[in-house]
Image (cartoon, rainbow, N blue to C red; front, side, top):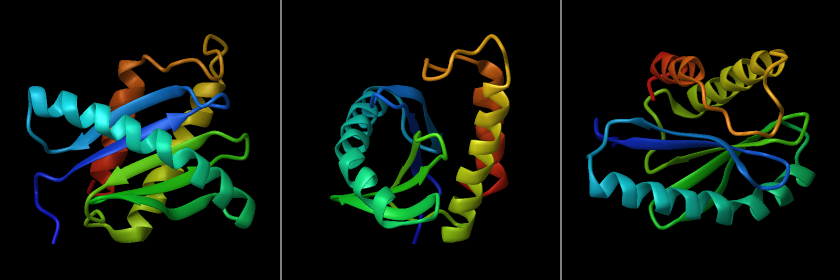
Length: 145
């Protein structure tokens, strides 16, 4: 059963395996544990990229569901038409279930496409926008993440 303090980690990985955007969602502890978790999350996400690439060629859908598991962390992925990888790490499936996770990733992709329409944003560069952060957090709350 998912605890209320469950935390999630979401990352967008670009074409050259560089991090375009990352955020921790949900409750969690603060301080040193958060820093340690961020480094562990980055390691798990990077390690899962090869499995995402393999799954991408076996599936015709953009949402790849669970692609990897490391200890208690599960990695689900969404691959855009342009080849970006959206990775979502979690210990327990969110309260909204598999459909909620898929809907979250789909809405984040729509938000990313709107960002691409901005002539001042250069694709595959890190996203450093408070408005984008807020939108991702709003989508996460909508889908109970």
